[in-house]
Image (tube, rainbow, N blue to C red; front, side, top):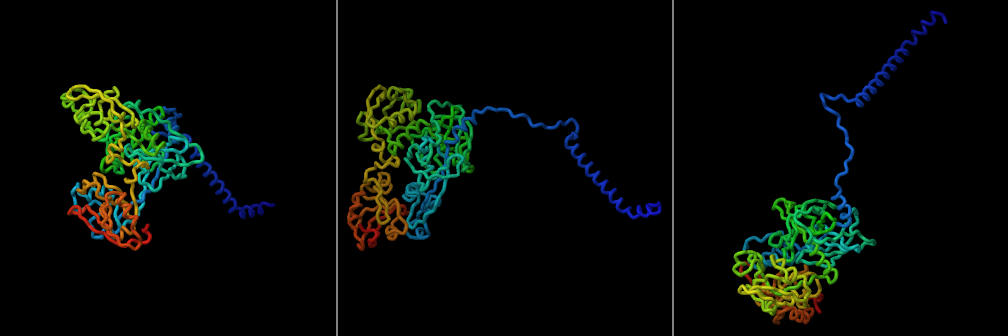
Length: 547
């Protein structure tokens, strides 16, 4: 190739060379940028005297709480319940028989707290004729105490539930639970689930050993948040029914509830869950909280039923389905008995003053009288009402106790045979769900009308004799009873002119009725602004209601 030809070739290749040069420069710039960025990341430039932060090595903290939780949490369950309650329909509101109210609808125009209407709104939960069923759902907690599926919880968690479902810790499956037994006096209940394996069990401790200031953990499902753990201390012991609020379901407290107080956070949904000590043992069942009207949540004042009480109730519920408590048939005021001036006037420094003695009861038979001051039971001094009530309540019916008391400042001793509290104080004893009630006290149903014997309290409210009829406790929707305008709280005193004194009379009169027969019920209706009135309700017995 000659010089002239080379020059010509070079001119033809100039654009290609230019492109090669540009490409080479671009690649170099990119590599330089990446290397510069990498170097900058590896070696940050710090301003002033600042030093880079370094993630420290993990430090092993105290594992006391976490170790307890690991052992206890598998035995704590979430409980969800469904309850079908009755709500009045427009038909029921407009039946012209006076106002009726549900718990969610306070009465208007009748502010008398002693009125019959107010009494029955509370006593019968506002049930009424012409009602529709509405579901209500709630959450709670429980603790497994037997590997076969027995669970201890609060009565108010399962009370009135038509369906109870239990979720085990860490599982999504919901197991249907059945109620083994309940005890309203202590707000405790035992339920059971059937699971084809042994379940983890919580260890129950002795609550008598708990001291104020001890650390405790509360485990449960506050607001439905499963497996929640909170910590606190025992703030006080032996809190009585006069110091503890009612629970979220409105259940009133009873003299057999003596609570441990704690500042471990307890909220709605914690009910029925365990309060655990530092030995990993259940020393209480979380039951109630003292809270502000607005917050309705934790204020640092929670209450748990002691485990010793829970154990006693559990053993009776699983063995016979209800709780039997001893009594000697006396009442007393702990506040009066705590007044040192009163005690000195009676010649003592401590004791419980008898307020009344039940006629025909064990105390009367033993010679005890009102104003006697009981100072010892079985040799142990009595400083609080619980010191007197608990030993008697836990004594088997028929067994004897030894009492020391003062009368006119003179000491005396007496042996008293303990009786059944349910029989000595039948109107004060809550129904524990057992099936040992006499037939005359059970609810009888016919025509969609549910009735039971009058109690002394109800009769007093109406101003009538307790043996003057049966009271309507519930009315089935779309029933014959609803058609002829019965209402909850009516007292049936005659059927076709035949006097009705009790359930036995009612049953006989109803059994004699035949389909197509005319029937007239004479009832006493209460709750109106004019007080109780007598009315006649009549209809033709339907075929479905004949016997």
